[in-house]
Image 1 (spheres, rainbow, N blue to C red):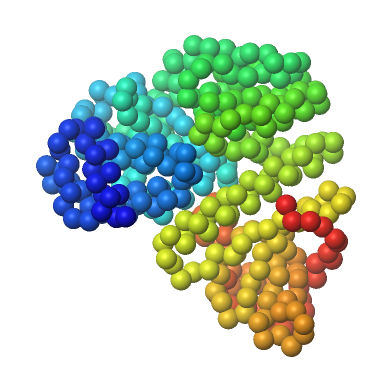
Image 2: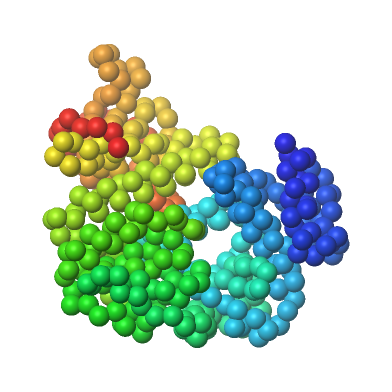
Length: 383
């Protein structure tokens, strides 16, 4: 498998500069100027991508690496106009940090769940702008973001298409519509009487609904649910008020909103587990499951087992398990996350990952468990 994968990668990266790359050994390519590409990270990206998208993702990744040295050798001024801001899910940031050693990228956080990353968009390739490039050019990151925003403003030839009363969609027709949420003047063109509720399900889609018009929000949910996503970002809507803010929906839409939040968290936490399983790490990444009762109330569960260190997801409830517990069930207690984290505050360490996880290296003692609030469960079904 590894030899075949290495040959495939060599063929892909040589499309950028024919004949420049050769196989030096299994899972490693060498450029004629001495540069190396270790393919372990590429293989992780390949394995963790869906069957239908993995070849495309691998190609983009390798072609970006293949052009990295060429771009660094060019004067920074030669591609100033090609710099673009891109809004992405923060999970991408953690994936790159964990698995792409070459990705010395420039980014900033927009919120806990969204980041803005700077890209160099060329005719044949697209790659992240490196911190090293900015440092060599003497350009502060803040100035680079300003340049990228100006470039995107100049490239914004389209306008807003009104889909219904209080509902608008950006129709510039390129891969940057979602990133135009960063352009305040462009966003201000949307006439609203309430809050601007923003939907960016993928990189090609930017939908804004007026919070004062319930039908507009209902229609926005329907449209987003019907899309075939290209470069998914987030299915969770947010408010744009001079920046990204959490949305607090009215009671009529709250359940629909929460289902989106929980559904996305289930998927992202599962992806986290898959990534770290490929690393063959000894660390246990606890699962994140969601239950919904007949009344529509939802609750996320995770579990901590005695004698096992774990990275716990930020759930609503923690099931404390003792395999040697004398009762019929090994579940020693089921407690709320708020009380668990309060009692164990000095034992939990938040990681840098998104969605958030917490390192737990010690199981709570019986006196500590007694200080925690039991979870009052209601019958529900797993979502």
